[in-house]
Amino acid sequence: MLTEPRSGRLASWGNALLAGLVSPDDAALAIVGDDAVHRVAGLPGEAAPVGLTLALGRLRALGATGLRVALPAPGHPLGLSGPPEFNARALDAAEAVVCFGTAFGLVPEVSEAGPTGDVHVEVVWHALPVREAPPADVPSLGEAERELAEALRDATAVLARLDVAASGPVAEAAIDAYRARAEAGREVLAPGYPPRAARVLELAQRITLLIALAHDHGHGAAVTASEMAARTQALRPVERTARRAQVAAYNSMVEERERGVR
Image (cartoon, rainbow, N blue to C red; front, side):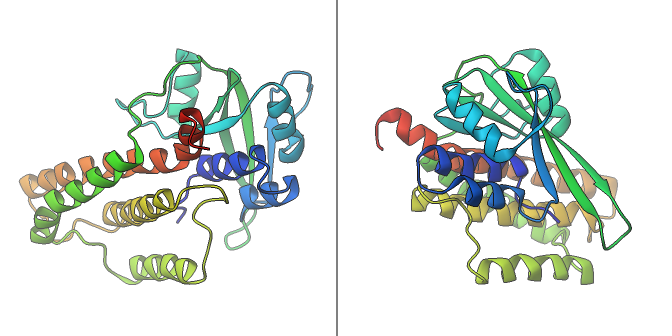
C-alpha cells in the first residue's frame, strides 16, 4: 500500500535539487523509488517524453524555483490554482505537482504490467499549463499540526466505539511494513526541509494509512446503516485534514523560501 504520493516524492526531491542540496542522479533515484521508470511528457522543446534528470533541468531553465504538491479530491481542489483543464486532470489522478516560478504543472499517469508479484510500474508525468495564483486551501505547517491533533481527538471516541480500527492479517502486515520502513530510517522528506515538516508529514502519512485500512477491511462493529454513516462521517474530516497536512509539509520548503526564510 502506497502511503506516500508520487507527487510528494517528485516535489520533495525536486526542491532539494533546485536548491542545490542533492545531485540530479540522487534526486531521480529517490523520485522513482520502487517504480520501474518515470518520464515527463509535454515539456516545451521536447517532442517526446524525457527522463527525470533532463526534465527537472528543463523546468529550472524555464524559471522553476520550487515545486508544490496538490492532493485534490471531489469537492476539494486542495493545492490547485487552475485552469479548469489542469484541475480536472489533477482530480482524476488525485495528485499533481505545480511549479513555482513558471506556469507549468505535472500530472502523473501510472501504468502497470507484469504478473502478480512481479508488477512493473511506469509513470508518465504530463506537463500542462497552470494559472500562477495561490494554491487552494493549503494551511501553514503550524495550522496543519494543530488541525491533525484536533481531528484525531474529535474522531477517536467515535472510531473506537464503532470498532473501525483496521484488523486482520492484511492490515497488520501493512502496518508492520510501514513501521519497518520508519525504523529503517527512511527519509520522510528530502534534505533542506524543516524538521517540523517531517514531523507533520510522518503523522499525516500514518493517519492516511490507517484510514485506508479502515476503508479497505470491513466495517468493524459498524453493522447498522446509521453506524456505518457515523463511521464515514468520522473518517471524512480526518482524511481531509491529513491530506491538507501532507500538502503543507511538502510545500513548506517553497513557502519558507518565498517568505525569505531561506
